[in-house]
Image (cartoon, rainbow, N blue to C red; front, side, top):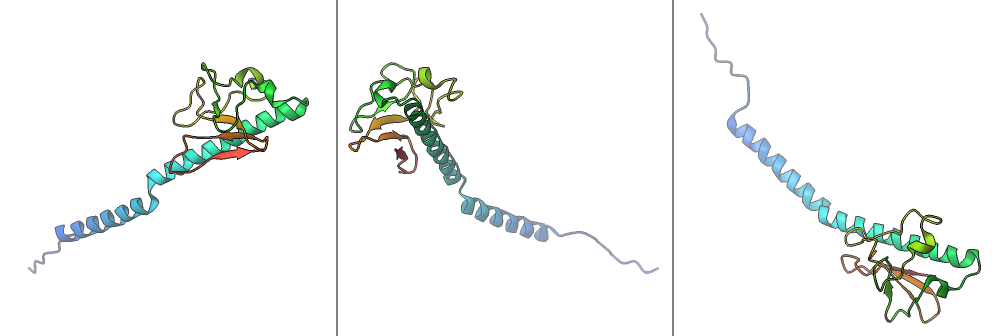
Amino acid sequence: MNETNQNKGFTLVEILMVATIILVLSTIGVIAMNPGRLMLNSRNNERSSDVSKILNLVWRYITEDDKDVTELGPVPSCSSPITIGTGSGKLNLDTLFVPDYIAEIPKDPVTGTAEDTGYTICITADDEIQIAAPNAEGNQVIEIKR
């Protein structure tokens, strides 16, 4: 009889090489995607959207019935902006906009609460309304005025 050794399978060295290649490729993928940067950009995009929503609410409120910005409450100059929120010392927009204009005032995705939304409002030197997100991440400035 003729006996032959027919081992079908992979050697330990081959398996370790494939595992090493997979590890290197996945590390490169994670570094290239940079999940921290993606999350930061996502939160800042949400802040930009929120700031735009708030300015549109204020603008709609003022222009719909020919109201003055002073009817919002004490809106200071941009040298000392006021925070939007229901807390003490904040500009409470809930009483004007919720639920007629919007379900709730937008809040900063990280620090925002109903008492302190994390967004500010002020009047610029050119008499424009400015809404800002002072808690923007990555040294990004998020503000919009009209």
